[in-house]
Length: 167
Image (tube, rainbow, N blue to C red; front, side):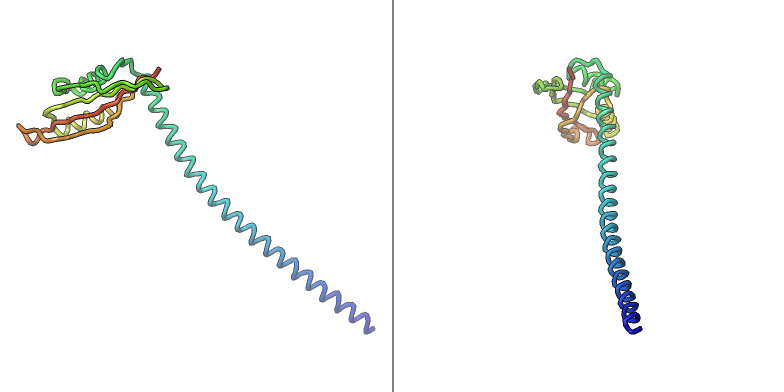
């Protein structure tokens, strides 16, 4: 009988040890899975941020692509004339000086310096808005704004513009 009791006790102890071992192994696996889940959630957040940036860039590229196909403008002088005519400020443009032309793989980039005299703050905002939303790829590289000598409420503006004509 004594051997039988020792055997039962041995099986009970072995069973408890196996249970504790399986419990420890399960806890380790659970901890490992939690770490992996946390890592995957962080990666998902990063991917969502990248997706949003990608969609934003794709939308901006689409807008630029759409703008380059809208206009039949041949050069920077014609582009400046179109922008300032649409705002009604053609007579305030004093000079349009060509600053060079560069051949790019996408097309031709033409630069010009434009002097505008005696414009109000509202007219300046309208000019910048029209350039930004022109149906062509026209960008402001540099803008110099000074008060007019005759009337300090009016402004003299010098813009360095760039016009991209695609092939």
